[in-house]
Length: 312
Image 1: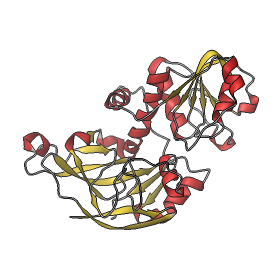
Image 2 (image 1 turned 90 degrees about the horizontal axis):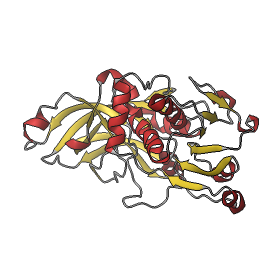
Image 3 (image 1 turned 45 degrees about the horizontal axis):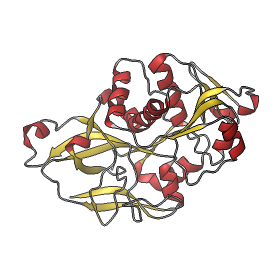
């Protein structure tokens, strides 16, 4: 079987073409994708060629780890449980199912094959907002390992989700820093220019900006013994030692989300404590992916870009 997929042939060289899929294993399912998100963090690094080396990294590569769609087939020996899932609406956190291209991420395609256990059932009523599940789980993971932050740096899509989950988890109202005045809208919390914030006693600062100079900014505003949690993805970070030394600063790095984070986020959504509406700013047909990807990375108005695969 073939699938139309987004392929990064090389840095800043993207194509949309058919790829042969690997045969479906006994415990795999076939998903027809309706929507896939473009990450302005890790995928931007893939686009620019600045992505640090990881096992399975290289070009050509199918990007994407934020897809939603419907299970349309299951492995012939997958058993009654998997076969009964045909028709189920699921979230796909990437797939490695292509011949002739790497699938380190692999979700930006009309059809994907993946282990049934990795196809996460979600409410169909979420629609395209379902692609935000990976980012929401990432936000939840950052809070789980570092505690609820009293300062969030960056009010992009991840910063907004961290703020919403902080409010949903225990009613805490964080301060959010944002240098772009067009992104200072907040719902239930304050979003300000860091230059207007005199406070220097934050106990937990969570960075969602991905800025290379964030540690100098954060350590300068940290309380004694406070903690900085890095929720973004970074090429290289450095900082001046004296401010961190004087505050006995602690540093945590939030890695990949876990199944427990996924379950917790879905529970918050199901109980109405967490809403994902208003976070997707741009939707473009998958047929114009060559324009959508650079726009997602360079347009300051673009909060979150989603590809619509339904016409493919």
